Image (cartoon, rainbow, N blue to C red):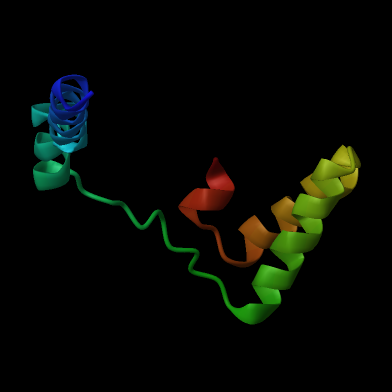
Length: 84
């Protein structure tokens, strides 16, 4: 019984060590990966409320209302985000 149990435990330990080791790809990713914070939203609090209201209108498929909201924002303070 011990003759079967010892090699079986050895194979289990060997598999654990091989599978838990990180791959070269994972190591390279961890070394060179850069996280991006995204684009800043440079709006004052009032503009932010109007932008959010326009986004809600767009999601509700009230496109004319959303368009008017975005156009008013872009006249007030044009930003690259609103241009897209």
